[in-house]
Amino acid sequence: MTSSRWIAVIASSSVLAVGVAACGGGDDTTSGGGGGVSGSIRIDGSSTVGPLTQAVAEKFKEENPDVDITVGQSGTGGGFEKFCAGETDISDASRPIKPDEEAPACKKKGVTYQEVQVANDGIAVVTNKDLKIDCMTVAQLKKLWDKGSTVKTYNQIDPSFPNVPVKLFGPGTDSGTFDFFTDKINGEEDRSRSDYSPSEDDNVTLTGVEGSKGGLGYFGFSYYEGAKDKVNLVKVAEKPGDCVAPSTQAIQDGSYKPLSRPLFMYPSEKSLAEKQVSGFMDFVLKDQAEIAKESQIVPMTSEQLTNANGELKKGESAAG
Image (tube, rainbow, N blue to C red; front, side, top):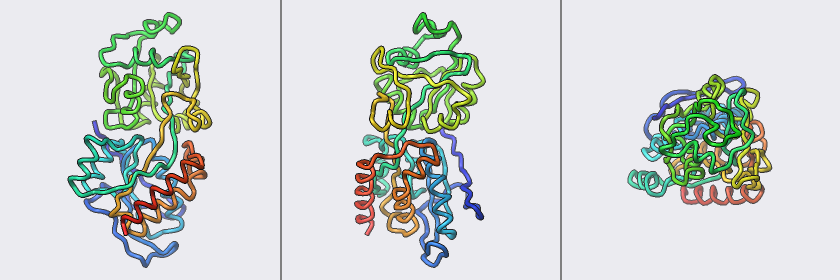
């Protein structure tokens, strides 16, 4: 299920262009005011990376008022579909591009790209405020979410859990969060019970969990940070007794296992040849710590930032 949701990115005095991205890359002209560039940048993909992208777009627009930026959130998979078709300049992703499906699609269309890490994230498991579950092991989460699961009430997972009917919410199959969660919890991407309420929109998942007595779901930790007063956070244990709650530190140091992950932007090399796109990507990494904090996303470590700058430079060099 793909739902393409285009978002207006608002700067202090200007509203950036919003609409369905047309085919082709952004147009570069160099006579703009402010930072001296103009043209357009089209971005789509992960709803987890989306808040960071919007924060960067607002700040970049302040310095480059003649650059129009569209930011869509159709999910990581939906974003790669558009990117590999040449419809966007940058694809936001909460997982790496799939080497057996998406990368060949890009190659077929002649779209070359660079994978650039921009932040970190963990997947938060949350419940309705009235559903009290402090911690779940990976095995328990698998019993609940695995393909063919027949769990109907939470006490079927563990007798200490409430005898409350299960009502599940989560991302749709175009989401990188769905891919990552199913891989780490169920052992295989896309392997999941189907009788849950899917959406590419985290707001829909949150509303479902919040409004259902037996509601349980998952989405990016960055999104949870802005909604922590509405739902309960469930700790996750890779092994029994090792319960860990997601936090900036636990995600950066990898102790929140197995649901910590890097977040990416994929600029096309063709678009990196345009000043507004290369400038935007440079801006992402230059201010990544401050922007990550503002958008409630976990920033990169210094080592990750050094590697990210190196990957971006490779892409800019290839773009000529």
